[in-house]
Length: 224
Image (cartoon, rainbow, N blue to C red):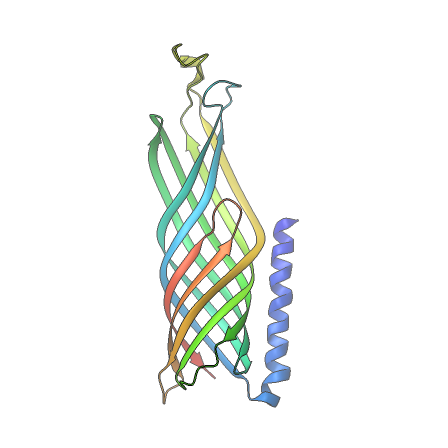
């Protein structure tokens, strides 16, 4: 249900974006544009592993997954007036894996995050014709896939007692979900006149419980 709801929200906003470009565009000489960007993403998630050993030390372990990766996005937007627009995006924050040790126990985890998103975009009224500074806020249907394994946990009766070898049991976690979350960002765009191209630098973030993925990207847009 949560996954379907997330995609339904994005589809409704995408339909609204298309309708705005069709209805408002001819009357207000709206700018239509499309583009792509790539840059550094931070893939963040919370890993919680539960051991099959009840009670004792190591019954449950929590790790904060935070790794850099190359991310990218494609987008299309409409700007019916100089100060306001709307944008539809698909963002891929990347797929990262990690192999490390915690309390002497090996941990293996990999996380991938991607999201279609819709934004309302606001532009500052600057007296510079080729420069745009903008901020954006909207919603993203963030899809997260997480697989994590710890080969075992120590379970000790007390801090002084030796740990039981029987407690050396594996713990795993698997997540495959889509949740609609708040998304926001800001950026700068410079038009390359007399062509229809522009270059933009942008930062975006999705507010998610357990870790907020983000993307700092450099890209190119083309205006129609």
